[in-house]
Image: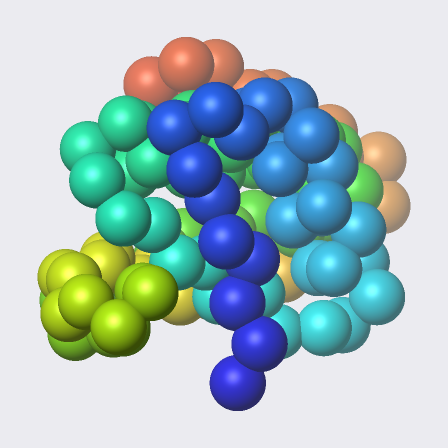
Length: 106
């Protein structure tokens, strides 16, 4: 399984663009983060990617899991985020109204 590796120095907007592109191409999205700063950037990227994707009829959510990995021969604990894609359905003439707190089809 391939992972987008996110660090504390990753640009959330760049990671969001990668997430949105993968979702649109039908490619599974999995991210790997080591450290609180990396997790912070990954979560920001998911929030930004939602903003990119919702107007196109897709929404995303994620599920975190812990994973023990080796980095330079050292065992580290990573957080892996699996991104799930949800198709939004709307009837002709409906619009998607996205606010910070909820998603409404109006």
